[in-house]
Length: 414
Image 1 (cartoon, rainbow, N blue to C red):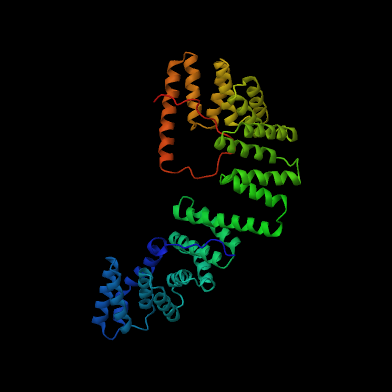
Image 2 (cartoon, one colour):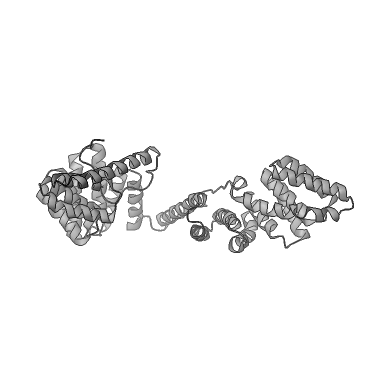
């Protein structure tokens, strides 16, 4: 099993910088090449035509000129290197490989051609042959562009050779060297995802009836919204170990998720029982206490809700959602002054939560602080508008929240 098939579009992006390193080095030596030829004027003309065509992006014309120059200067390594780079730009990989090999045969010290040949071989799927050159290029490349290009191809080669651990190690090094490069981040995400998939697949083969296999299946199903399957797998885990910490909580979360799809009161009651069971195993599980507080708050059972939110905060004072939940309970119980410090604490933890600013505007208004109320509501509006734009752009693509996030009780006025 080789996992994902990684294909990099390097001829139009990452490799271009490396190619021009090779080309410009040759172009700057065009006079020397021409002078070594017996037909100096003709060689000079072909070299000039090829360089000008390259500068204009006219690859077919550049190829014709350098092919003619090769006919006159077949013993000059740089001519073959130049032509190989042009072939690569055109996507003529077999021709590029032959030209680059000839260049290196004539002059083994052409580092740019060595790196480019490794990239060509990787593009051709000849990963074993490409590997030494890619490793050398990645670890000892003269420029950041060279390192980046060879690193991406090295990930591909390692994956093609089923060396997934080495691919992950390369991805980690690329992340460190290019932390904000979108292409690097994209391909590294595929590398990490592929490694996770292969690890779970190996788990299913090595221990198909184990707790860990059922737990992996449950979490995968939960993340994909397949609640029935996730519930079944979590119950399989509990059948093997009924008091394993965290599992009753995960089962309760999945039941809550299903209740939002089915509007089933039974699912909510089962979720409540699972959260209580979790607290019986581990009273310090702040997530379970929080979810119980939220269930009671939504049922308008405010004293019980307050007790569970306070229990969550007793074990995890920096729990933003619990601070917000307790503030909501205190607001509903007409205790705005008591709610205020919880909202202020939530702001110190995260200033980008629109719910915090809206509830703060409510409290400041009740307390008669008109200026603070106006400022908090303005922050709320700004964050809500930004959130709407993000959602419209389809950026909410990651895993669900670990706990049920606080929501606005009603649609506030704009």
